[in-house]
Image 1: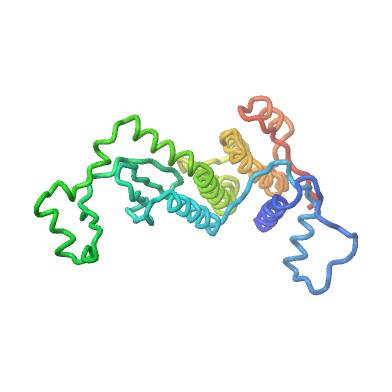
Image 2: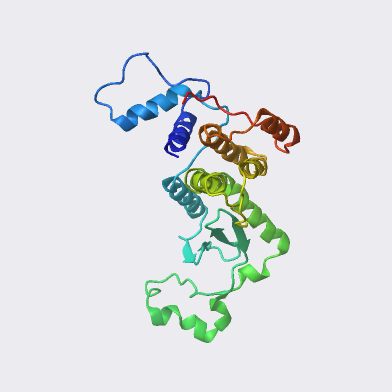
Length: 283
């Protein structure tokens, strides 16, 4: 298990480097000031080329920053600072016929018409800030204080304002969604997946329905099923790559490794573009 975690750590480090470069190795001994953990990590890094798979892995700070950039963009477009409503944030424009914007914590956005507002009319006089005077016209003509622009604007003009918001925030929303997806992928690969694979290989339990896997042949089949069933995109390939590392360092190092025929069969029957190719190991 420790070997797998070190290999995954090396994989994450390699993604931040030049995809075509190997980690530096001057052939000398490790600096005596390096800790044992740092030395072991360097040994793992020396064993692998940086993978061809390019995918950014995000942390919580990246998600927060991306969300702040979305809000700043909306503020620049005339929207007020967002108000939290459960798992979403609502932004209202100062112009009441423009749509209000709802941004979900899951990284998606939608818009709704703004409801009528009750506002005191603007009075260009020195006494306009006096509350009693400010709201006096509403007693004389109540409709003078009601703003219903969000309900009476035509569908065509409303759609134009919605499109303006979508186009104006598409880059920030894409970065926000990518940060959320990257954080979820990071948690999946480094926290959930190793335990799930251990449950299959060492526990002999299927992670989906808890049915027993009494033979190692069944366990290998479930691991291959897990590898093959991921989405056929960069995120699914990142999970596949982590599974391949597990196979190489846990399964193939055991007394019940995958046979060449099993690997050949899954590659022939796979639905994804990525082929199952195990990294070479030296321990």
